[in-house]
Image (tube, rainbow over all chains, first blue to last red; front, top):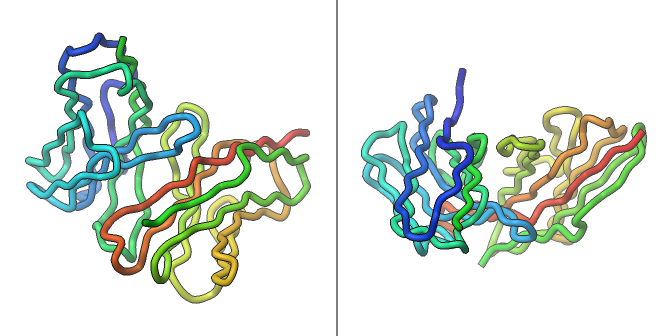
Length: 115
Length: 115
């Protein structure tokens, strides 16, 4: 089954404790992206990747890191989480990053709470 | 900068009645426009997109959307609403040129269909 898998789905952590949210897709998609969803703000892009070893900042990259060492995986790293990073996070992928596409496939989401 | 406005936080409709979820956009040049739906505790799912051609676009689950260039709008419509259509709907825009690979989402509209 074609899917984007995120882990963990739920996480409660404390300020400053490094964490990684994993994302994996099995569709051989070139493009992957991370979004955060906050009430009243919709979805905001954190980072995206056009292909292996190619990443770029989105709208709200501060406090986050990403890597794309393999095509299928795109982990989101919070080196020193803070309470303002409490949010619902989504990983998404697309066949390519070309502008005439845009049909993103989303994971189920990871709800992160930073105390 | 590109942006999307969804002026209604919530839309209430009786089952069997037509529904409209509004979306207006701002982008330099021509837009690619999308609608996504989010069911509770799930990731977003692609509904439909406008790339070029016919202004009326048909998508999944009986939904359609009309692109109006002069009003910079892309309203989502369905002739007869179902209770199962109740969900959070997001409009998104991408610039055809000059916008990079950025897909900008609106803040979402909660659709509630009641018996």
